[in-house]
Structures are given as structure tokens and as C-alpha cells.
Amino acid sequence: MSDQYDARKLLALACIWAALLLAPYWMPPLGGYTALGTRVLVLGLAAMSLNFLLGFTGVLSFGHAAYFGLGAYGAGLSLKFLAASSPLALLMGMLLGGVAGALLGTLIVRRRGVYFAMVTIAFGQVFYYIAFQWSSLTGGDDGLRGFSRQPLDFGLFKIDILSNADYFYYFVLFCFALIVAIMSFILRSPFGRTMLAIRENERRARFLGIAIERHIWIVFTLSCFFIGFAGALYALLNNFADPRGLHYSQSGDFVMMAVMGGMRSFWGPLLGAAVFVVLQDYLSSVTVNWMSFVGLLFVLVVLFFPRGLLGMVGRKLAS
Amino acid sequence: MLQLLLFNVTNGLIIGAFYVLMALGLSLILNLSNVINFAHGGFLVVGGYIAYTITPYVGFWGALLIAPPLTAIIGLLVERVLIRPLYGRDPLYSLLLTFGLAFIFEDGTRFIWGAQGKPVTVPAVLAQPLSYEFFFITGYRLFMVAMVVVAVAVLFVLLRYTRLGIRIRAGTLDLETVSALGVNVRTLRSLNFAVGIFLAGLSGVLAAGQLGLEPTMGSGLLMPSFIAIIVGGVGSLTGTLLGGLLIGVASGITAVFLPAASEAIMYVLMAVVLLIRPRGLLGEEGMMT
Image 1: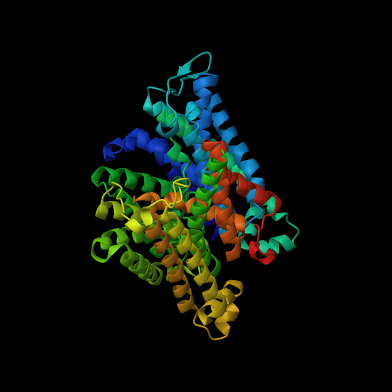
Image 2 (image 1 turned 90 degrees about the horizontal axis):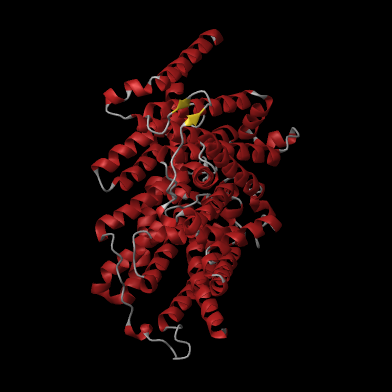
């Protein structure tokens, strides 16, 4: 039974990676374009980073867009004022998002449950206001412009990720794979098992002597680093950082992606992001009232598909 | 200088009174049902637009009387159909659902009433400034504050002296026991939700007279209400009252010295409270989880 299960798991993994690797080839015939695939990948990474906290530790953050947006601004500012280097921009973006998360995390982990969510939302908005008000640095409402991602320079040869969309897709996929590998490594470690223990029964975990607050803080910080990295990639993708990327409605979108795909599965949020991005892309091209439809999607998913797409599939397979 | 300070403190108090009305409704629903009602701002906007629509027929006073109960009825329907199925589940789901509802409300009001802001005329009696020297204290502003005071007083009397209120307070502490004592918890939650939405509708009508109406105004008022609840202490309505006034006055005073930071000061206040008193000013120890 367990062998069969493992084989099935390996097969699924192979399918996922094959689909991701070949995306620039199968997407255009289906009516997509490579940049859409890159967007799915970046937002999927963001949703997976959030789910690292939400799905595996059971702590609801509704303000993760702040750290995503900080990553984007960090990357943009680094390209604009520091040096014309894409890897440096990614690093700076990740650091900005992660360090902000680590600092605020010390305040946030003092609360739990719904109140944790409220505090994360409120603190998330701080950065939205800063980006909005400090227009001399951030461009205010118009967003940060005037930078573009730079070709990767390896000394001997260059990879032009700026003008070739496919190259950029593979660069993003490489970054994605890196973070995903780190996440799955952590989840397999004893630390990851502890995360699950906290999710399943916080009180019992506390009685076992686990320092709950410290663990949640570490997971929160890690997930802020990951999502900051995703934000930096997003800035490179658009050559633009948008204050609305910091707003709590963006956080809501990330939570929705995770829930829609299946919070309890590792790959669920990526699937959720794919569905969400494609649907939003389509809806906003056919109707001006797309906001109502997105809202309706939230309502319907919550009422009828709370386990998400992969959750439902998993249940079918189990029965 | 003194007049400017006075002006901004008064302004802050008025805005604070407003946050209080919003936050009390949110707080009621949060305490009893563990639901963060993201659509609260949406209900406020709906209340305002209902008032705008019926004003030509019933006048401002009629609208003030009719719009809040109508909003509460919409709230009751939403609770019955959409939120009730989610009570036993992770609070994440009600949060996401009301978040989606907020989208629908905003887009819906834009669809029905248009994206352009709508002015709401208040009766001439209220529009006059009271004195030349204190030009900023118009009759309407005083009236708003008076309405908030009355609403808060009625709410606290309701919670302290009526059967419904006592049950709501008991349910906040231990809903299971209240249920075991034979109280219909479902009805209790519905009524409590309706009371909260009534307050949102009332704030909507009052806001319409002061600020005019816009489909997006709800989300702008939501965040300060969250902060009022966190600062005041979750689980304590008196705390919410205090929190709302405090952040209103704080942002009013900051507006004198550093206008750009008048919004940020609320967050600073919240950070300070969380740092030195994580449960909030009047929050109780057992309520913090």
C-alpha cells in the first residue's frame, strides 16, 4: 500500500515538474502566453510561502501582501539606486520583506487565532501607507517605475532575461525550484514535524515542552523571507512595483489561492494561483464588474469547496 | 495655534466617535461569533446609499430612522444564508467569505449608484456653524456626536439590562454553557449580528451627511475600526469605545504637527500597546487567545 502510494506521489511530482518545464511550449497553443505562466509561477510561489505558515502551522496571516510588496519595492529600489544587477535585487527584496517580517513578527506572535489575523492585517497596512505617502522615494500612488531587470552576467557568457520572455520564465522557474526545495526540506525535518504538531493541537504541543511562540515566530519569519523573494521576482517580472501589491486585498487573494488549491497540500496553492490568475485575467477582459465575480468566487469556494481542489481529489482517492 | 489645536482635537473626537460606532458593531460580532466581518464597511456604504435613495421621499430625518433598520435586515439575511453555515469551522472561512462580500458590496454599489461620489444634503438647521469664532463646530458635527453618544448609551443599556443583552454578554464569555442553559444560540447570534449591522448602517447615514458618499468609503473606515478594537482590548466593548476615541484624538493632534503621519500614528499606537500590554488597554487575560 505504502509503495503504491509513494509511486503515485513520485508520478504526480514528475508530472508537475514536466508541466512546469514545458510550459513555454504548451501554453501558447492553448491561448496563453509565457508572461502569464511566469505570473502564475511567481504568485504561486507567494501563495505557497503563505501556506507554509497557514497550512502547515495553522496560523492565519491576512497581511502577507505587505512582505510581498516590500520584496517588490526592495528589488525595485536596489535596481534603481544601488546597482544594475538582478540577483542583488532579488537578495535585497528578500531581505527587506524578511527582516520587516522578523521585526513585526515579535509583536504579532503574541496573539492567536482571529486576533492574529487582525493584527497582521493592521500591521500590513502600515507599509501600504508608507509606500503611498513617501512618494519621493516610492512614486506614491503611481508606483515605483524607472527600473528594469538586468541580463544575468556570468563573466564568460550572458543570459538575456530582459528581452527573452522564455529565458526569464526559466530563470523564475529556477528560483521557484530553489525556494520550493528549501520549503520541502524544512517540512521534512523535525522542525517541520513540530510545525504540524502545533497545527494539530497547540495545547498538547505546549505541554510537550515546545516553545510555541518561538516556533511560530520562526515560521512566520521564514515565510516572510520566501514571500519577499516572490515579491522581488514579481517586480522583475513587471519592471514595476505597485502600492496595491502591499494592500490587504492582495493578502486576501493569496489566502484565496491557498484555500482554493488546497491548504493542506504542498502543491495546492500553486494550482490555486493558476486558476485564480487565469480566471482574473479572463474576467477582467470580459466584464467591468469582475470584482463582483471575484467576490462571488470567494463566497462559493468558502461555502462549497472549503477543502480546495487538491483536497477534494485527495478525498476521492482515499475513499 | 491654540485654536488650530482645538480644531484638530475636536475633529479627532468627531472622527473617533465615528470609529467607535463602526468598531462597536465589529466588536459585538467578533466577540460572540468569532467572525471578523470584513464586509462591515460594505454594510456602512449600503446604509449610506439607502439613506441617499430614500431622502427625496422621506427627508433626512426619515432616512435616519429607516435606513439603519433596513441595513440590519440585509445583514440578517446575509447572516442566515451565508455566515451561519460557517460557525463551527475555522474562522479563516468566515473571514474569506466576508472579504468576498466586501468586493461584491463595493462593486454592487458602484453598479447601482455609479462610481461618482454623491452629496447628501443635511437639514438647514444642522448645516449652520454655531459661532463665528469656532466656525468648525457646525450643528451637524455636534449632532453626529450626540447621535453616537445616544447610540452607545442605548447599546450599553441594552447589554446590561435586557435579557438579550445579558445573553449576548454571557455568550461572549462561554457560548457552550449559555447554549446548555437552553438559550437558542442561533437566534442569539443572528440578533447580535443584526445589532452590529444596525450600527454600521447608522454610521453610514451619519457619514453620508458629513463626507458624502462613495463606493470605496467603507474600506477606508474599516482599518481604523480594527485598530480601535486591538488597542482597546479584544472582548471589551468599553475598551473598543476608549480605543476609538484615543486613535481619533491621536490622529487629530498629529495632524497639527505632522500632517503626513496622522494616519501612521494609529499604527504606532497599536504597536506600542501590543508591545507593553498585548491584551489591549481593557482586554481581559482569558480573552487573548
